[in-house]
Image (tube, rainbow, N blue to C red):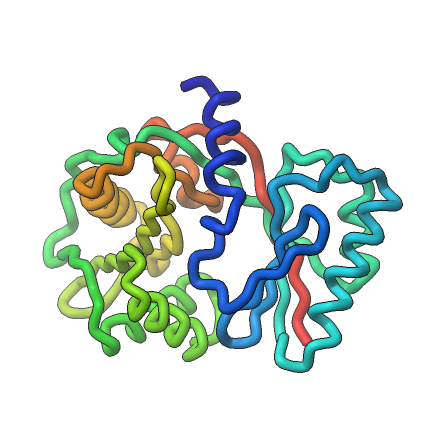
Length: 261
C-alpha cells in the first residue's frame, strides 16, 4: 500500500466510533463526535468537517466547546486535529476559546508484520503482559513519570475500567529487577484491519537500549496472532524513528488542542 492508500484506510476505518472504544457517551453535532470519558474528560473528533468554511468552523467550535465547558463535570478537554484535514481558521477558533496547542505528533501507519523483530534485551530486563490492579497502577505511574506528569490515579482508574470491559486492549510492560521501566498498550480496532500501538513510555535512564522496540515487537506478535494486519500510532519524535525502521510510514500529523478547568 502506498501512502495515499494507507491514509485512506486510516480515515475510513479509524475515524469512526472505533476511535473511542471506552467512551461513556458520544453525541453528534454535525460532522463532530462529542465524546465523554470517565474522569471528567471531554474529547472532540471527526472524520472531516463537512467542507465547512472559516465561519462554519467557528460555529462548530463555539457550539461544541460551549457544550463541554458548561458541564461542571468536565474538567479537561481535547480537540484532536489532523494535518491533512481541510479546516480553515480552526487554529484561530480553538485558541480564541482558550485551548492550547500541544506538540504535533506523527500519524504512523503500516504493516504490522514489520514490527515483529528480535531485539536483545539488556541483562535483567523482561517483558510481560499485565492485568492485575497493582501492576496496572505501577505501569500508569511510570508512564506519568516518563512523560514528566504528576502521578494520576485517574489515568490508572481509566485503564482498569478498560480492562474490565474485556474489549481486547492489552497492557505490556518491561521490568528491570521487578521495577517497570517501559510500557505500552495494544488496542485492536474491532471491524478493521488495524491495531493501535499506544502509550509507549520509557524512563529516561533506560532509553536507547532497545527496550521500546522489543516491547513493540511483543505487542505486534500478539496482534498478528489475533488476525490483525495493520498498525497505527500517534508517535512522538522519540518513537517515530523506531516505527519507521519497522516499515511504518508517516502519513499525516495530529496536534491536540487542550483545555483544563
